[in-house]
Image (cartoon, rainbow, N blue to C red; front, side, top):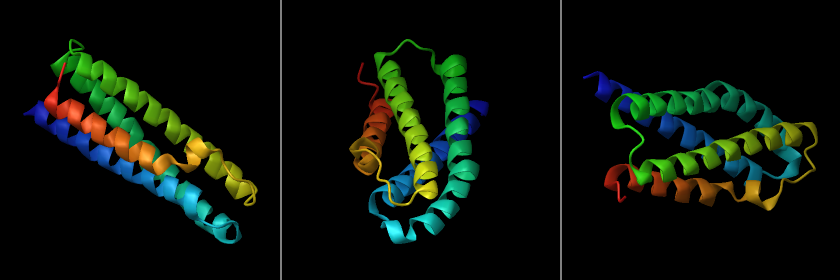
Amino acid sequence: MLYFVIKGLHVASDIIWVGGMLINAFVIGMVPPPIRTGVISALRRYDRLVTTTALGGAWLFGLTLAFGYVGFSGGWLHLKLLIVVMLSALHGMQSAWLRRMEANPLIDPPAFVTKGMPIVLVSTVVVVLLAIIKPF
């Protein structure tokens, strides 16, 4: 029973985290400079309170599942962890660029941060497939 509660909390945290990263990617890539300051101020509060908390929950519940129930025996889990580490780093870059863009609305982030939406979407699909299929 506890396994399913932790797994449910892990999946819920993942969904909230990925949703927040997609919102960040949209604002970073699509919002024009004249209206950036107000939009980014509101988004940064949401990112700190919701998205970053969900990121912590995803890691906490995921590592609890890995250490307590699944073990680190499968190659699929190692690949999944690598992708999640990269997504965590991308979230850090998004947060940093939101802070910079709030201070100076005329600067533009590098292409890797601007193109965050397809990176997040493809990574999420791969992680979900790895977790369900466990190919290796």
